[in-house]
Image (tube, rainbow, N blue to C red; front, side):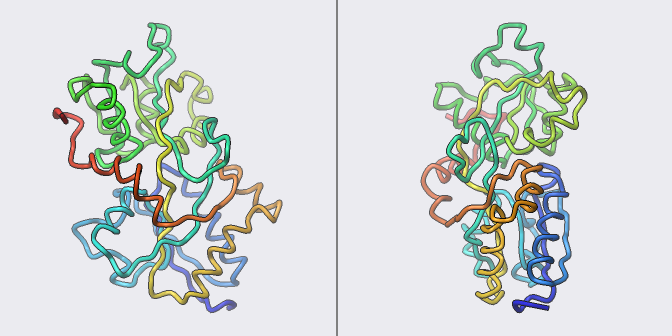
Length: 284
């Protein structure tokens, strides 16, 4: 085994928002780079460590984790000394990301039938059935609440509310007309439409909200600094190898770029500040 890594324990909380094959690809990359073994845990029930259980970093059961920005900010609020932010994050393709910067977006989607009924802006969706992944999702609900509040709206804007459990399920609800609209993680829509019925052609992108803070990669603070640096450099160097660049491009990843804690303050904190608000109550 090379570079001081013998067994790297990875967990992803990002599925099914992201395909599990993306994290299997990261495993493959790290094994090839370090000559080590890797294992992957897949936890789809929560966007980050369970809040009512000991987290896997404090109990030293995980080395590397992929989670949502909201989940990372919650861990950071608790001043968890067992974690560190790995200073690198994926950059995804999106029509709004013309500068290829870190961060992602919330895509407001409708069925093509709604477009035919003169739905052209977010405000045209008043009283319509809204599907959302969960109330803590920045892209699935928080950014929507913040945007509506800025437009002088309140929670009475929504018609029926359907908690889907995932961004992928929200998109499927719109496609099957169970819901009239949804706000979904832009990376989910990018990858998953091609697997939907007729390539998801009946899903219409109405508006894009954001940019939201980058996806954090969280690492066990106990790991040797050389190991952390080696993982960071391996991800940053992906564009230098044509084969790996091509493999990651299948998931919409252009490259990995530097990341730091400061990006989870400022505008990101403003979105997070609305976390106590709910979709089904007035919020001002």
